[in-house]
Length: 176
Image (cartoon, rainbow, N blue to C red; front, side, top):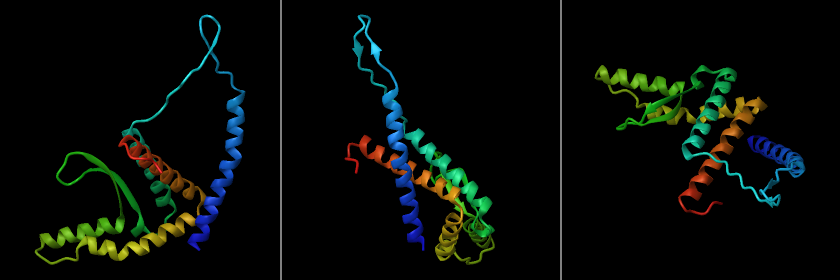
């Protein structure tokens, strides 16, 4: 069922692209952005716009936050709520965007409390791996039932794809 849904979404995106691109091209061809030299001759104008890698990364994080905020509102199971925050990675002061499911945060807390009580708690990572398939199924179910949520997810995925492509280009590797 998920395969059909993905295929339907891809088909819809392709149709939208086919409908919008010709209209955008027509509008662009109607604009008169001709730049003239002091002598009145037409000159070619080149406009360069772009984003830094850091700006692209922040765009991805904002899209991720929008997706998870919408997901959390629609998600009926509190165990699968996703919380995003900026957090320093271990051994560094550099903040990174981190999103974790509530069940994993609960497992980390239980593990820490068990260690403090000199017990041998179940490692949080083990609980995470055991619940991950159920979490994924929940996300798929919630996204499949909500087209707006699916659009937010596709937006995030597209931003990630552009970011990775740009990163490869800037690192001198060919882009696919």
